[in-house]
Figure 1 (tube, one colour):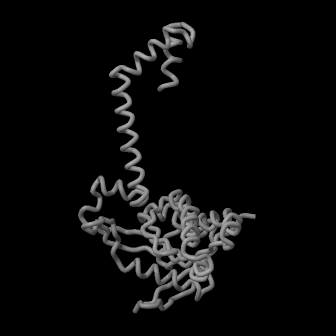
Figure 2: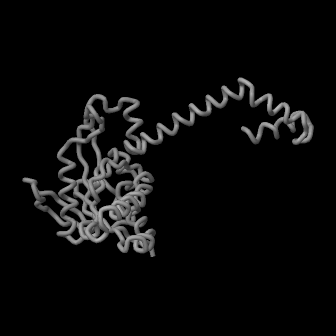
Figure 3: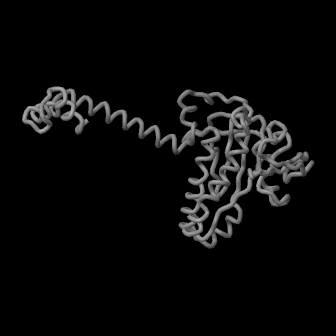
Length: 264
């Protein structure tokens, strides 16, 4: 506004930019109520936008919008897909780096993965140490295998930044994941600090599936129930493990290994 006003005045009046007439008109504008009211409007808009962006970043992608529209003021049941990821060898890395450097390592690790999560319609539900819990509304996660592509896009993002991680920290992070879907009750909870939480057995089951990755020597395990709802024939290779007894669960669950097929 400060730069363009004298240029616009010069064009409008058809006189040189540095003429006395232009600069007198410019000074009159700067001291006018029009200029003052414009500054107030722009400042207010900028302030509100920054506050919204900051709160949104802290609450999570899309969560603030749900608070504003009151989507979860009353608990509701819905179908959701969950992905639990866990960094490999995180304890050993933390011991070697120390608390402060490990904090920066985790921060860069999270930053590296977030674009993939947003790209395929996911939301970060929780950061738990080096674990990330990601969720999708059922239809969003199923559509075009979004939930699967998220996992492998996250892997790809780490591969692209492997050299940077190694130069900075001496370690390259890797992770494994477990994925499942089911019905959860979603609602706002808390008095001092409100959060949107998901409650249901599907979260506990997904965590147990992720915990079984080491047993079956794979980076990604899916429940067979979820695998049947995905189009695994397009770019993915899968193998059924069969019924598995998961830690802390009374009933066994059929699991599936999934690998992405790299095009030749």
